Image (cartoon, rainbow, N blue to C red):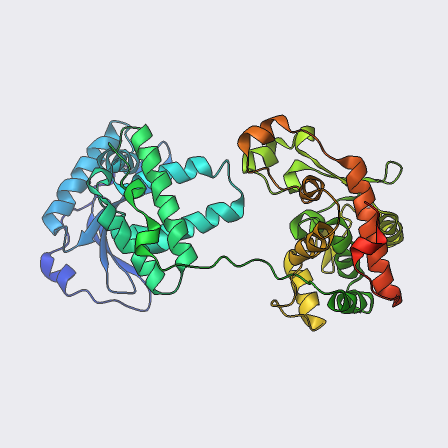
Length: 422
């Protein structure tokens, strides 16, 4: 039996006086068309249809912007599409994309979708947040070709005025990258963000570095604090070993037992754990790994720790479960619990502490930088310099570990340059 649905049940008076209730509800007009009354009182026209055996809903728009008469016309057009096998919802999205392909937000979203495959998840989320919170409200719906430097400067100043100078700089960089993409794909003729000199519009700032320890007495106190730490064993050993190997906290916290070669006395940090571009992390090539020579003190500590965590994947598993590693925040909290605030030392500052002591000696700066796995800022030199200074780094880290032992045992503290003939 064919059912015939009565259409045109609604009137403007009924819709106008419809009030919100404790639950959203529908006012049917017939033929699949209805006006949905939301909890907020907003009234939305929708059309229910079936296509390829599936029930679907086409959102026409809000009342009263779209009148009852207009909603019926659009319902009839959508119904014609369905009869021809065309999905009206999909057709609407395609048409919207065509109309909006030159809108700043549309261009930015396409650019960001491509970058998502190259970036780390945290970098992607941070960039998305910059755009959504600070850029889209001002530039989102503008034709990208009609945006000029003053429009971008207004955003930068707004962010800077709330005290977020670094964020303002990053936002300028994000907008500039979006425009680079737009120019490359013919959405814009030029990049107005490149015309902006941040030094002319932002107050001067002083770059802050991670806090480091410069005095042997304070370093001795840190060592004592770590040795007397009564928290999770993985955190205690992580702090102890971190000071000896000069790795980044994230490189150490994510370390796996498969990276340690006790026979060769080396630690191979894979590219996926290093501070590299996301595409290099994803490739995880052997040539992008960082080789760390191990002092006897580190080997001894790892062998002891292996008795506790050696059956698992991670060297330093989380106290909350062996299936995941500790995080850098755990190290920070442990230091705070020992009484060391961020102005005194941070876990990342362990690297600077070691570097400061070692640079006061006759160790070559290149060897120290190699141990820190810093990228050579001289692009030409970096392209041709493949030295890893392994023998010198092995010797350097052993001397550093021996020096820390003198602080632990309470021996007379002497400058490190006097205990090495390098």
